Structures are given as C-alpha cells and as structure tokens.
Length: 211
Image (cartoon, rainbow, N blue to C red; front, side, top):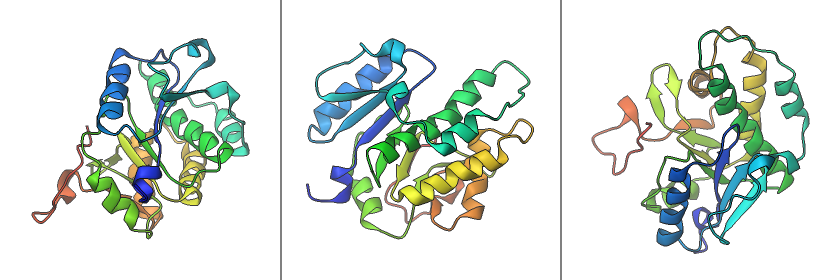
C-alpha cells in the first residue's frame, strides 16, 4: 500500500444540500472494499452532525479557510436563465471547496467522486497516479463537455490553474462547469481526459463512465 493511489483520499463535496442516502451507501461500499483508504465528506455547517460512521472524516465547509480565489469567485454575480441556476452554481462551487480543502491540509493529490459515483476497482487509479506527467484528469462527456463524476488531482498547482480559469470565464453567458472542463483541456497540457466517451480506443483495458 505504498503507492500514491492508496495514500490519496477520496473526497465527496456535499454543499448546498443535505447528504443523500446514496452517499451513505456509497461510503459503506468503499469502506468495505478498501478499508485502508481515507474518505472525506465536506458538508455545510447545518449538517455537521451527519456522519455515517467513525471511519469517515467529516469536514464542515465553513471551517475551511477562505482563500483569495474563493473570494474572487464568490464576488462574481452571475445571471442565469432557467430553473437550474442553483444547481450549476453549486456544481462549480465544489471545485473551489476542494481547493480550499487541499490548500488547508497541504495536499497534492485527491480523488474526488460525486456522491452517486461508486468506486468498485482501484487498480486503474494506481496506473494513473504512477504517471507523474499530468495535473488533473476527468472523463469526457462529449466534444463540448467534461464531467467531474470522478476528478483525479495529481498536482495542486494545475488544479489551481483550473480554478483561475473558472474565475476568468465565469461571467460568460450561461457557461457552466462541464463546458469549462472541456475548454480547459485545450488550454492546459497537463489537464487530460480519462479513457471515456469517443476517445476510448480498442486497446483500452479500462474505461470511465462519464455519467
């Protein structure tokens, strides 16, 4: 268990809503399959009493230091149309919460999972983290969208570049995090897609489900 993957925590960000039942089930599955791996769940203060078991590290979002990039993001007043404005704001805000968590605890690597994304096999993570030549990876949804259903961070500095990219583009009309994930791939050489979508090759031994 000396590999980088085994030492990399799995982090769930449950902000703007109550922790779901399927998150609790997901945590139970991961702890059963990989009992040595650290699991972190970040929640808002109103849910600080939520904890599925003593093996999960519960972090209250409001306890994390508000760094400069968070303050810049929060200061942007984005105008949404439609009914999903809170949804898109929170899905993007989670990246900044992850950044604050990594900065406060001086982490270089994390595995971020959405609460309904289950990790059943970790061998492919070992292969990814054994390669030092990348900063962040995530699945491809389509030609215009990435997906952070699973987000691997190998270098904090590259992840922070992505946060800067979000801030620089957040005022654009109706832009959301999935579109920004796709655009960042073309801007940063150390941001890469995991084997997914139409980039899966016949020789691929494993794939990532972007949905």
